[in-house]
Image (tube, rainbow, N blue to C red; front, top):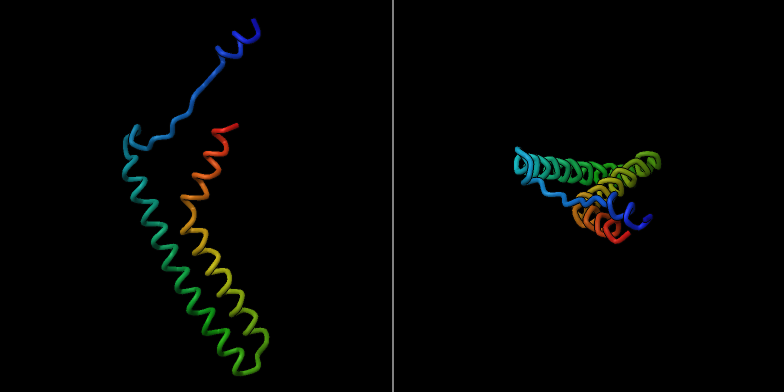
Length: 98
């Protein structure tokens, strides 16, 4: 009896953006936002490297630290943006196997 009750409560999830109106528009919007985010990462990387270089040559340790931090944060953000789909798919696959 209990097994029958558990089977009756079973649900299934199949995410597919094409099943809703505007799904393709949402995918394109996501791609565009990721593109802008990568451009901002590039700007942060260049500015951070410049601050790092200026701080290092002028012996300004705080400016050097800020430059290094901006460089590292921009690089890690670009890494996460590039791997976002793989990260989401990994955790979705792990969740499906539970």
